[in-house]
Image: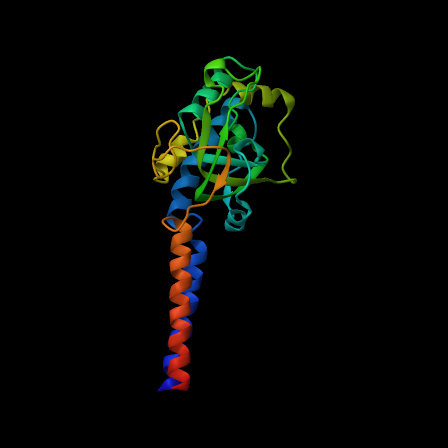
Length: 235
């Protein structure tokens, strides 16, 4: 009887441990909904700009590349799923008056075709004085909720300079569209994930009340099951 109980406990431990690891990323259903909408937009933008449509594919291994410790602007090849009011104002500023266009248009580059996301990751950054930053936004804080790591495909020809200029003028949607699809809550300007004011800059992963808390809970369950296995075998 004991060997059978031991086998069952080992199975439960494996399932529990696996579940705690995947909580940071998107579920299969979330991946499907996200990619369906993103690829509709990629197709529309590709037709508008004049480059070949290449569907984005989800790669869960890229979720592990999303780490804490950087200001929002320091992320390379990573984009948000939800931005606060200040970040949206900056985005609109570059679209309407600047030469940068949509600063989040990396979602739509044809040679970028792999993505992995975390709904729980977030980052903040205070906008410093800069010629390209509107005076009324200087000193305010941009906030990202949910981050995606994107990777390019060297086998796909990069978009030309002419296409790049057209892309900067294309009607690309705000990242908030995808945050809505994935159920990432809207936040007021200057508020954190828990509704409290944020200070300073950097990236945070949730504490014990967020995804990490779920992972800690999962780890606790694994520990309890391990103790149970020991008792079954040796008592």
